[in-house]
Length: 99
Image (cartoon, rainbow, N blue to C red; front, side, top):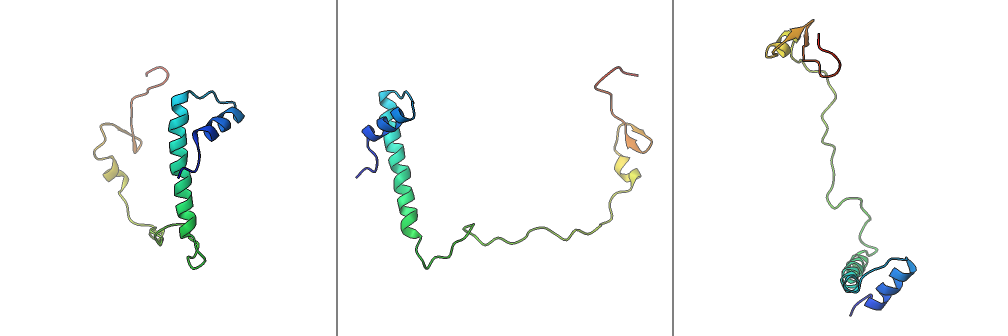
């Protein structure tokens, strides 16, 4: 049994002022029927003994503690740089005039 007919889709299209070609009416009717059937299945599963949840799997915090850790020294960080100036990476200028 279909939940929505082709004529109902055509009626909805007229109300929405959508000009749908004939072949799209059949396609949309079948797609809307699948959507309505899926929603009905979900409504069947939602019973009083199923607690509401926001996610299918339990979620846990995956973040680590925000603690300072030793990092690279400026010399270590700049050791592979092609050009260095004032302990910073020197890059070619891309806007404006070159030096």
